Image: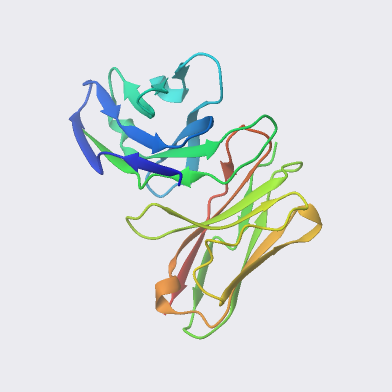
Length: 116
Length: 112
């Protein structure tokens, strides 16, 4: 069965430090991969996505993620975080297929706390 | 263009009452999702509509929960005989193709 594991429930980090939020998934077929961000008291916003092509995907706010098929991972990275990056980050996976919409499977989220 | 719209934004109800939550998806999006997010928890899948196909209701927690989507557009999530454990933020999202769902701001339901 398809599943998504976000390996860290909480990640504390100092401002301007690099950060990596880890996401692993299980699926035997091709997948679409997503990272969403939820700022305090706000809705979910798409940060970036991998559908096909280059395995390094760049998103908004300086975030990027790399799809690693052999390790079934899609880790999110930022070289230098800001206080404003404090938020909940969710990884999601859907089994792909051109033109298809699929039910997304979600990780439980990683709470990123950026401290001054 | 307009995003996903949900109403009401907040709903306070008494235990045992029925509630209806509304979602207006982005125009042209064929897929519509309902999720529930409890305090400090991840996203709990409730139901998924895709075009004219039969909806995937596998996430509905009990038969008190139901949802419909009229004309392939607006969706209503109904919770009958609400219980305190139903208190949560109910999120609606819509998508088209593999673009990734766009989410509404949610309805915060409080059952007293």
